[in-house]
Image (cartoon, rainbow, N blue to C red; front, top):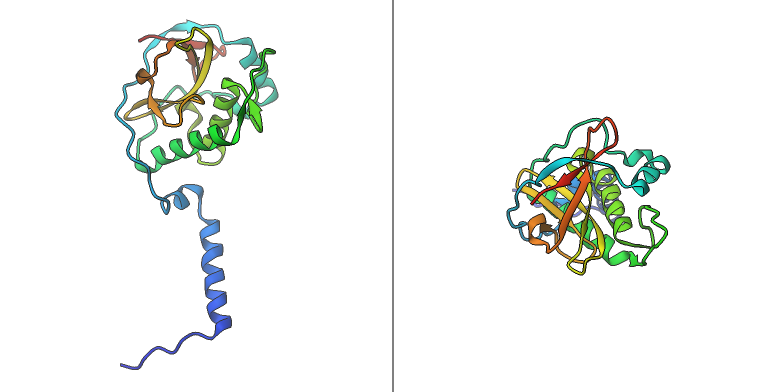
Length: 203
């Protein structure tokens, strides 16, 4: 069998360049498959649903400035869980927690955190990244408010999956089942609500 002759240097360069460009053009989720996946998330349970409740005023004002972040007309639906989906949650949670500096905002202005922000700004930024960069369905992600163990008001992002609901929290590096957090849960966004209502969370 004849031996294969090595490619000339220019052809080798073009072949490598083409492969690099092809990889760069892959969807984010396809690229994520090439990364080392974190350990699987522990099993969770679906969020506990209570009665409808009024939405925070700061949230309503935020949606006027950022209509693309509206929960939409589709009802809450759990996304099919997978190792890739879990890796995306882990990546976004750690990325935002690392890159954004916590800054207490007493003005109650909700905005996607860019450089700094408080808890709800972290949560909104994570929501934005998961929807726009990783293609998560908006109706499987909800902002939620609660009280921390200190009694201080707090906000997180909840991801609703076929394995249960998980919290992306600026106070913790890991994505955790919502019941694993020592919080007193109050309410969450309600996708599909015709009157922009939220829903109480029961434990």
